[in-house]
Length: 567
Ligand SMILES: Nc1ncnc2c1ncn2[C@@H]1O[C@H](COP(=O)(O)OP(=O)(O)OP(=O)(O)O)[C@@H](O)[C@H]1O
Ligand SMILES: [Mg+2]
Image (tube, rainbow, N blue to C red; front, side, top):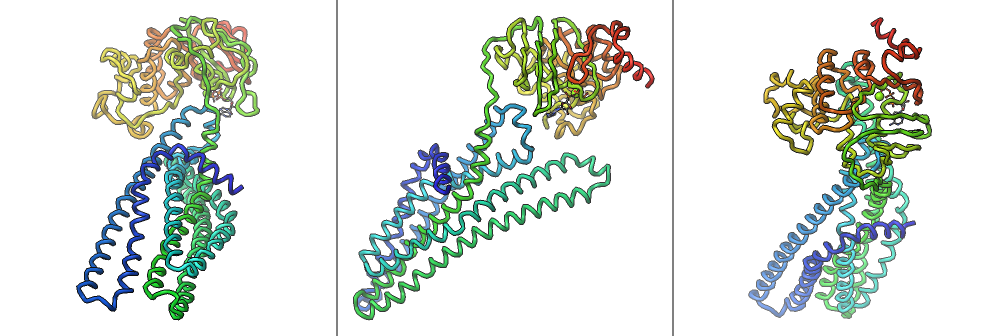
């Protein structure tokens, strides 16, 4: 189990081995240079009685110089090390973010935003602390351990044997805490994700929480989540610190042993006092790499769980799309025996439909009957439906996805608004001519409120358009779609916050430039705009026809209309 965790981390960090290779030279210098100091100390002490004050002073200055150089080397090599960690951490974040954008909507929805945030922003940071330096730290410390061993054995093999015989104790201590650290690390990552999600959720529900006077309730909830996270963190700290202290205890035992046994050897004149002092000051060179190696073992143990969380995302299948054919224009769309389920629940049940270009369609049905789900299949937001969708008699999956998304645009009632200018919200990463912008804002009736905006098209809309009314936001998302002149525009209740007069104006002008439109609406005035009305009931097509046909032949439709007329 443990070996596997090491293997996983090593396997994952292989891609950064080259970067670590470049750090090797400064690290080796930083490890080996300090070995000079105890040799100088030994010479200094052994000759102290025979030398005059000048020599003593020159030794002091020599030692001072060595310390200054040591610190400088340390500063530069550490600086390089942390820069590398930050570099790799940034790369890991971008790479995970890229992967997330390749996932299917279905897989992504299995995770809360807080969980995703915690994985992309925090787990990558923590993991990078280990993976960016793991090879280097192991190499540098083994090098230090060996070079120290070489010197220590050359000073006194008896003392060296005593010092090195304590090494297995470090391994036993590390084993002792293995499971505890693993479990508390899993738990800490989980409670942290929950806390971030809890915060995100309450912040986005701020208005509702205030409106229902539930500040205290949700504050308490957040406090609970925060306490759980704190407890998990404390537990993890407890075990990692305990392991650290156990190791330090052994670490502190060694000098006592050395002083005791070394003192005896000096008395017996087996070694000089200078040798004992030099040996004593070298113990740090034995202890330091052991401490560093045990730290890296702790990091690897903790990172193992973090890596699992990151690899869980990497192991999700990419939302594959192999179609290459360019979709030039849409003449007709045929849905053949389409069924679709979210988890186990079948939402769309064997639907057959024909959508012919240059027509307007209305989809009508009770809330939850599957209208949005059905239309989500046309831009292939979900691909795992059964049955086939044909565009111009060719399977939709054979088309290049980008060309498909140029021709079919879907606008829901609360589309995403960037915290950017009105212009950038319409451009959305593309550029358009002044003439196109003018048309788009005129057709989507943005002109009605544009003069009220302080900076006109340059007005920043706030997070998710918080500076605008719902109807204004909807007009912007419609403009974003129509400026791109799709062949098929799907409007899923995308004007339900706009007054019916403006809505009518928008539909009339859109109809002039977009050949085919599918509208989902609960408003009769909107429904009637389409010459083809499709009634969906419980995931099935119940009936279709014109408003007049349906009034005569479809009871559900006429009942629906009656209830609307009553309002
Ligand atoms: N992401 C999802 N995961 C699981 N089930 C979902 C998901 N989205 C919708 N559903 C379920 O699918 C069913 C159909 O939902 P859909 O949004 O298609 O209905 P609708 O006809 O558009 O309703 P409305 O008029 O309220 O917008 C509902 O029972 C809903 O609970
Ligand atoms: Mg819907």
